[in-house]
Image (cartoon, rainbow, N blue to C red):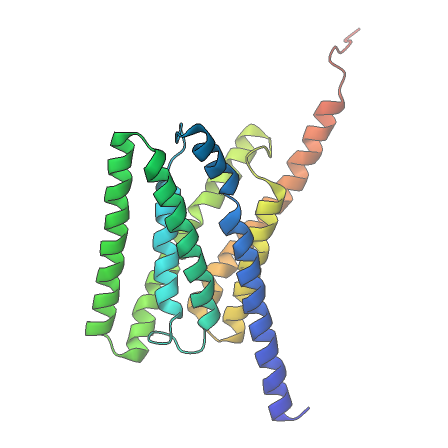
Length: 235
């Protein structure tokens, strides 16, 4: 195989991994829709928390900034997925604010403004203080920190599943989509020789495997428990 053909194949595989990551991420972006349908129908946020969507918005904005050519040329698929994600999270936050009680509404508005202020500061500092090679490194470390902090959610779910011995709070298709998205962007980062993409998504892929293993283990146990008779004889 010629060098040109090898490069073409490599490029196609890289793009395929990035596009797959975008598609699997879209599944995650739309997953909260049933929750917000319930909020809109009931015209109340009930006991739901809006903070996960605030954290997700900040994460998407930082990763979007990292994926733009001004910071990291050649990884536009990182920018596309996070631009879509940022729009979804912003819409969710605005709906939450619309139907929240006054105190919760003010807290959410304050959090939203803080996110935009922090993101604006990151953009300002990275442009004013860093030239392109160092700019990518600076924003890249922030991206890794942001992505790893987002993995606190899967760790909480894993802990909850082990404690309750139930997969009720860990839907299979959501766990599968998370794993496939992380795996896709792990591969995309490898193809692009970008550790700021491959390392955090590699960690995400490992956590995804753990979630799927726990799902199959505890769902099997749940089935065994459900097959037991309601009254057992100990005679």
